[in-house]
Image 1 (tube, rainbow, N blue to C red):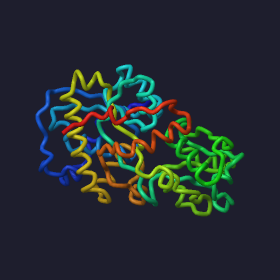
Image 2 (image 1 turned 90 degrees about the vertical axis):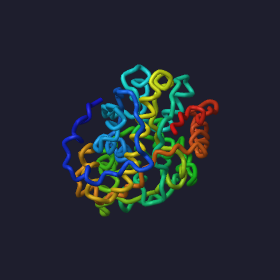
Image 3 (image 1 turned 135 degrees about the vertical axis):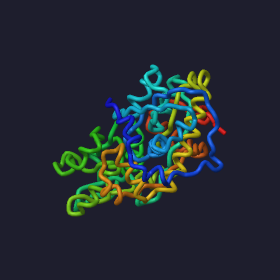
Length: 324
């Protein structure tokens, strides 16, 4: 676990502030003073949170938000959240469902962008020239995911099955995403589930790497990838702070979508991801969203049941905390 640059955004140039979205219909409501400790991943999907920090939307809500980058994702965040180290966390959706199934009373407070049609921000990548086109071709070979038992692993297995392969005959290796292309080059793996910016970097070297499949778009379209969550205890004891966070975050979504593809947006992403603006300009970044689409929860839950991550179905929609 590494500490994020909590106050980096406050020193950014006024360029972003000058393009801030007016209050309009999203005018903040007064909330009691308070602090929320938020666990994040330094990825593009959390941009609305950092936009809300940079634009002062949380401050408008009389709310102090501090962020910590937790590289282990949901597997590390949720135990820390349950243990009181954090108040809110951004976790992959299957980890949230699994925690709920195990009796951790999490509340879903904000959603994330759904899977988009290609070109997307995640894809299965292979070495250029390799004669691999289906899951059947991957039997007996190694496929890299960032964590076993999470959404990448689950989607990879579903894609293998959907394209004629036996998921149990593929060797899934847990490899950090920045190291996946090196593992491909060294022939340690046959395919890797890459996300941006590493996907765009790889595709910029067509002599070395090529798309095997837009697997998420093929087998997981519309299903949830991640949620912002807190404990039910926080909702019961500090509901005004949770509501203030959601309102500030939603204004961050509006700012991101108004500035996506513009220099202030590139500067925002560079400020917390350490990715250079020149590379960010090449990326496909989908619109931000805070919506929680319960209608598509079943896609994920059925996939979890099929892959034995769940032993029985759960009512995940009941864990949604609605903020008006």
